[in-house]
Image (cartoon, rainbow, N blue to C red; front, side, top):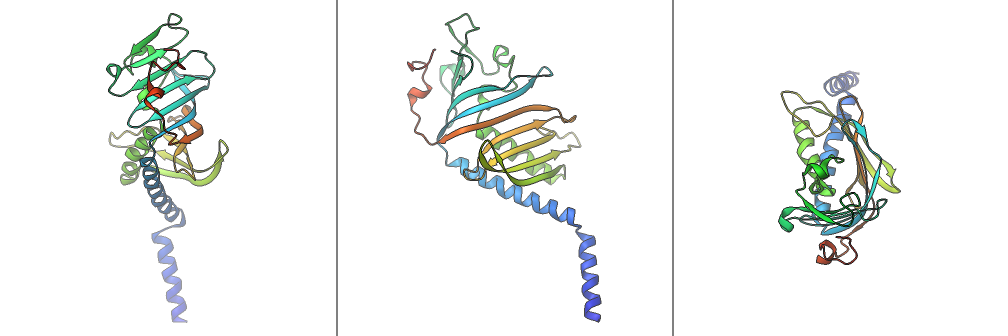
Length: 244
């Protein structure tokens, strides 16, 4: 009988010290950090990729229509973009080349001319939340690596979901987290919903919401092809398949 009483007391003490919700939150936090390490390791083995990049952004308080863009990306930072629904609209950026400027071609920029801009030039940022240098899996991973451990350290993040679900036809791990900064700390977003491809361990979708829970930006990568062997021609303005 004494053994039963002692066991019951131990269960009560354990329950009080670590309620189920708190225990689950701790488990989710540990699982999320482990997942983040696996994602970083997976991305380290990527040399280049192509994908259909879809984006919806709120600019000047207005939610823009979704864009669909063919993207070619090669490490460390070479990017070619071709808009799928705007004939002739293209952008090219190669870090360390072309004076570190974006070469852009758009029907609205004096017809058939190509122009060069700094990545953060107002002419390019007018309808965008990010410069071309922020595109890709690496940027999403960088933001998560910077914010999540810091927020956990200061108990300023709640992992709302860490589950499995389908996204864009792919099996993914969905990570939903809410950030509550204090003492002047700032995080990239208030609420984040990120979909990580289970097979490739890459973030193929992310949506970010502000403090009023209004969507600020949503990005997804579909038809992803990894390590396809992109060449210098894929990032050259002299490529005859391009309109530069």
